[in-house]
Length: 250
Image 1 (cartoon, rainbow, N blue to C red):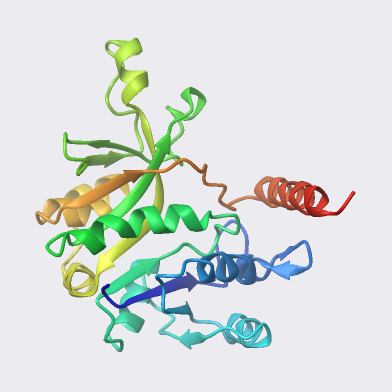
Image 2: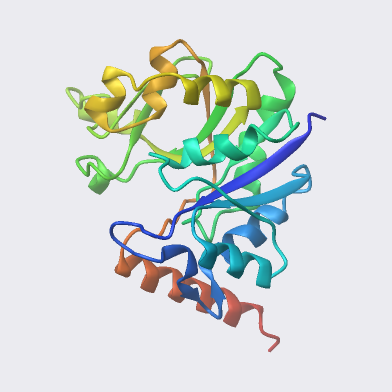
């Protein structure tokens, strides 16, 4: 099995939620919740938090995790994990977003499977069914794929366009943002300049498609619940409370 390391990018100065990785979620900082979920994937040999802030690094050290300090001027989380990946000898790098405290370990495993079985596949990601209410939401990224499950395009607009609504709705998929890279592909990708499509949509994965890198898209059964707003924080806290109450003995 290829050597695999997961890297969680964690930036303190998030625009909408400053200090987001350290937000308390049922007694634990969010970054600890994410770290613990990733540690449940047995194929991942090592988990590293990549951060530019000593407060996050200190929090990771307090719960026994591993953190690496990175440059503060990275334009994206992908560039941040590439800085760390360049120092590793792992073949596969798993990029788990630091704002996914409820990510299912099964989702991570599903995204890793094609990378383990297809040595020439440069990267993989995940998707889930798209709610019709999110079709016009530019904050929800959509993806369409070819017959082999490789991404054709990502967009903030509804794709495919619903000229035939009944057909389009069956094809709508939400991109959920978990990435698995071949290490050499990650370093190659981050060395390339931003592509016009990437700049137009504000989606860095379009750089890979522009330069001919295949992205396998794995549809997952578990819905992603990310934290981007104060309302999301409330929703995740409620979800965790339900999980913990259901686990209590009767």
